[in-house]
Length: 584
Image (cartoon, rainbow, N blue to C red):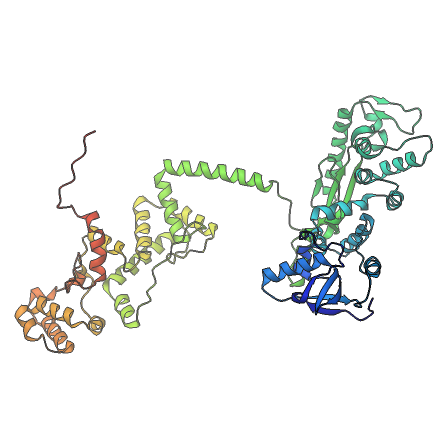
């Protein structure tokens, strides 16, 4: 074996050596080590030797396959730490080197426990330990359960005098039960239960003795059997014992609360208080009391603890300079699934009631449009046109009318103590309910005014909806718009301009200026509009501004006319006869 320092070699230059004891077999299962390799790379060096200009892997075949998989998934080249053998080492030396230096033998559960326990004492969570070692969280919890064992039992297990099924059963035992089991094991004339018998002995085989009672035995009305060979009596009825024990536990919980403990949590009977899932925390900083109740009647009050998740949250808050809220949190009275159940049934009932009360539904609909929610995505129209166009629209009579209505609606909300700045959705359900509550106090006419304002703010410009609204309201654009400088500045198509000349000055005039510049033709339109006493000109509108809009050039694209053409059949009676119905 070479004593050289570690070298990092590219895995692309590696293959499995024929000296590898698993050479030639099917690809190994690497699921247990791959999470660790993916996160941290290979931590244990591989044993390699030079073979035909490549590196043959003598020990580390699974690590090699894990690195190949990582390279394939990440698309990156990877190197691995390697110890290089001398090329003339024989198979016996290779085997000895693997056992002595690489350590392929898996650690025992006790060795794993010692490593896991050290990390747990340093504040590592079960998930962090599992991630670090590349194992399942359930396996970590099983190993950490050895912490419940007394030193005597752990020594017996390390010496392989106790089998795995027995040691796992003993992790469920109380300290008193463990001492009793050890006594039985050491006694030459008695037999300590093993395996399944041990689990049954712990769970219910032992009678409930009087030393487990939190209540005064003198006031107990049930029957107690005397044990002539034991120090304590035995409760004849387990049900009567638990009834009295539960009352005593409730009294202790009340006493803790009176002393200022913010929460006292009773674990399920038989559930273990795993110390690695909790961290110490004093009462003044929000620590809780956890009550552990064993099947043999033992009750243990674990004072001053918080869950690991709460402790990590508090440390994170402290690191960023924020105040920890551990002392303020209270355990929810509903589980997640129960909260979902209640929420969905309340939701179903609310929907049924809204369907039956459309006047309420209308107000809630308007509130959603104003404030928004997770299911509503409505926004007010915002113009992105050039500045001259925006100025033209914003200073027009139509915009002034809308602004006047907005002020009137804001006054309506103000009367009910609610601010209104138009449609401003932030998904805050408190804001939504605030608007809803105000709408419920308004008259039907006032609600309709708000609805009209909201609809006006959220109408999409350039859409077919605009054309539909103009049609059904019988809008006269001449009452809201007249040709201004922005209009003439943007008017550049000579075909359209000449058509406007024909419309305002007649076909003869249009033909006479057909070859003139666009500027000259627009001057004709301007002059006609300035003529006094010409009533037919004072209300003139280009075909684009008519209701419905019309195109000026046959076959040319005209957005407003095209939009109207799409929907005209929905709002105007069809001139074609309806198709005859088929006979049944």
